[in-house]
Image 1 (cartoon, helix red, strand yellow):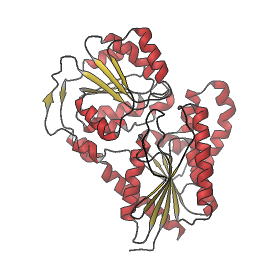
Image 2 (image 1 turned 45 degrees about the vertical axis):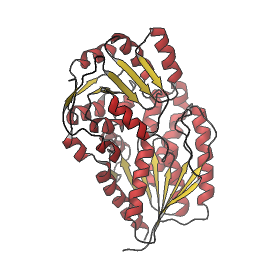
Image 3 (image 1 turned 180 degrees about the horizontal axis):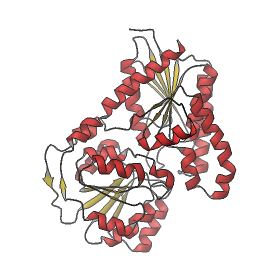
Image 4 (image 1 turned 90 degrees about the vertical axis):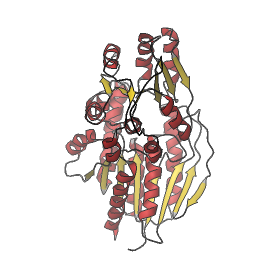
Length: 397
């Protein structure tokens, strides 16, 4: 084996938290722990579970998994609002800079769906003069101009763009989880070293995949959505009128929390829907059981231009389970689903009429998607990504 390594992983979300970032980071860290030379250490600085205000689970402030050390930062309480999230991140960043001040590392890895995680990883790598591997799960600067009021983005965009440019240029290598991101980075950062390791299917979902086809026999099929309910998902726009259109024909079960949950409740009440069940977030093992009991799996993103580039991790979970997939997405996600997922129906985001029409194309059956699960197994993707991260750390030798 080669010389020992010390790799720092900055992950705002990590197990046992509930989020796509948590699931990916946890799998990657375990794989790094397996691949690093003997005597090496992988150190994670993350947060105590905080993805949803309504989901509380205990986790130690520090724990060790063999050659992996995990330290968790306690954050102030928040309700998913932007001000609350900013305050929480500021706390995390301050503790990270303090924890790493006197430590030596060979590489810093940062997983970012928000710009400041990229900047934080860049700051640590700059201070330590070490390589920086940046994993980008969302293009924050591209998204924020759609989500925030024009007056705010007009003032903020020049600053945010400069921060993004500095962080990306600081990175030794950048991984993007969606092929839809590639054109953005090639245009804004010509010559950048890009990788394209997507999200993938975790072992729990592969084990839950059906072995053979089976019909859906429930008289009133259940449509399931489980995940965040914020501005990005736009459920408060689509679910109330869609559920009303299928009253008596479908039941909608929505599991999760987020910044638009109250507005979703208000809109459901205003629409007079009686076929929608709202539940708080559940642990992952319980979630897989809920998936197994559902008939149709639902996905939706709000109608923003930036979201045409993304590839939600939920697509991989849904695809593995063999259920019909009903998705209100556009751009790269729509193309990906049409290409890779049999028995799926795609409609333009927030378009109720098209959603109703598209439902008729779904077959009421469950069937294996063997080619899909083979190609996008998380273990295969993460193994190659971990190898690349370790190779990148050698740039400092």
